[in-house]
Amino acid sequence: MFILIITIKVLIRRFRILVFCVASCIGFCACDRDDPKDTFLGVSDVKQWEVQDHSHEQMTVGEFATWCADDRNNFHKTEDIEDVRYKLSYLPAEAMAYLELRTEDYDFATFKKTLERYTDMSYFNFRIELKNGKGELLKHQLSSPGQYEDRVKYFSFKMEKDICLVQGRDTVFPGLFQFERIFEVAPYANVMFAFDNTLFNKNEEFTVVYNDVVFDKGFIKYHYQNKQLINLPNITEL
Image 1 (cartoon, one colour):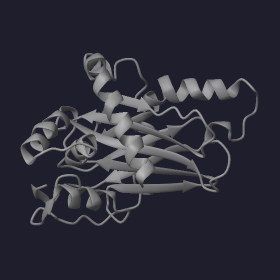
Image 2 (image 1 turned 90 degrees about the vertical axis):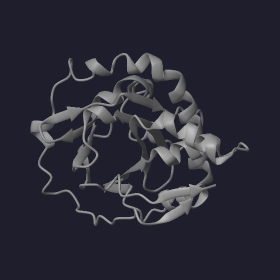
Image 3 (image 1 turned 45 degrees about the horizontal axis):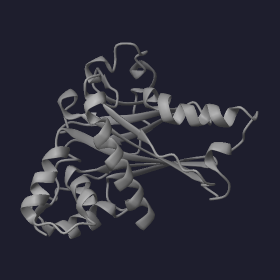
Image 4 (image 1 turned 135 degrees about the vertical axis):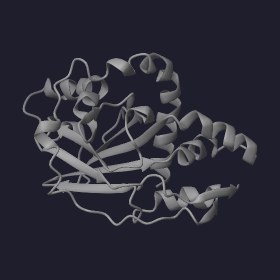
């Protein structure tokens, strides 16, 4: 858990550097890509999750962060396909602000100011890992020496094209994307991406889809029901 928090914090810092450059390209995110929704829009095989209303609850900032990190929370969705595990975690704007400030001394006013930077987008952390926890993910089942570098380039520059959010007839691609390059043997890979909130309706159900072309697992779908991302506890203090 501690390693994941540090990882996310590093990615957040990199995100803030990329915001200006990537934001100017958001309007073109779907112009030069095949629209995959006809292939995977059916969600009959997607697990249905119970949606609870937490909007009447009140928490401190720390309590909210702990609540978000709980694996029993509907923010976290995991799919195991053969030897690979895919875990998608939604990160509310409040959690993003907390992760940015958690190593600093700050007051509630500072927290609210920081929170404003994350309200325009919906952030997700995506972790792909080997279920047995052994070896390096990007070296898993290599067919040639050059395939490793191809995978590094794919995760760094091409993977975002295989991630999208589908809602009704609309397909939205990430407006921000960052791959965490780990220069050591690790059985996992972390990426963070975000969707522009003006391009979809968080009140209505949608599906986040990843097309795994690296390990040939096909389309992996994570379904979010109506209001699942907005019925959150209220933060009252630090």
